Length: 461
Image (cartoon, rainbow, N blue to C red; front, top):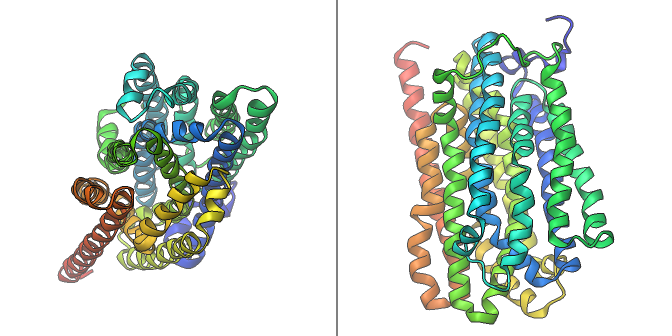
């Protein structure tokens, strides 16, 4: 143990000041998320300017399917990361090692099953998600390459979550930089030089993830790592799989419901905009979604930094440190999405202009930014609270809060407001669901924290 770096010693999660730990764990995660988000934005810019405005719409059609791709990866990766943190808080390195083996195996199984089935039924799926004869070709080209690369993507993302959770946030950040940096270099070459179109952007993504995949795999093959792959450890253990699925079910359902929501959003935009404007409205949503995810991913970076701190201290019974971590996380989440709100409200045309020069597309996106972002500051708080429950091993509450924001509140609003306000009603539905979900999450967090605190006091702890 002494031969390993103190900076990556997971036992410090229970002793160092919370603020210092959040800097140590969240800053690398935030940097990695910012890099990933910037890649997504830059990639969309290359597609919009190098292929055309309909390519942006085709890319937007793939969002729900991409959410499903991520869902089956997070089901394993996030659940495994949380469990490994809890095991390390209990000083049980043997069980944490079993988690690594199980995550690797399940990532490969999920990739083969999900990727293979989706490739077989790709066109019907894309049409169901809102593709039109004008956009199906772009969506098909992009997703075909992505789906063939799912084994690489799943292992990279799944093990990278474990790397961060087991005490190596800086190395997890580096792996994200490797992926993003190579991607940004290859995408314009494949799109503009080789003239591979939107498929070139997808191929650049898989090539970059392959290099990062090698980096992450080397980390877990090294015996210098606290937790590493061990051929003698258990590879498929039902008790671990059940716990991983139980905890990973929250982000899984969050991505699945996001998929469902995007389908309804795309169809609402197509219905409200008609044959010509509908495709551009979907493209406007694609632009808004890219900018939105930039700020949301920063909040996710905070939650990724919080996750090992929360999991370790909850497992060790340090409730005061758990509460303090949650409180600081809420402040940070609110600050991040408030900055996003200010930028989107003040500079919507500048943001749209990054992706397109089409005046109609810019006009639709402007309205979308200003209506949807009205309640955006509280989104950061809702995300922090939802991930808090996931990180302390309470997936039921996390799942409930995820479903309320993306499904229970949004779909009824989508059934009403677009009929009254047209395309602006779609944006208003998103804003309204965000606010209602925030109120519910805040009340749930207050009640749960007070109840657990009283329980500990009654037990004399």
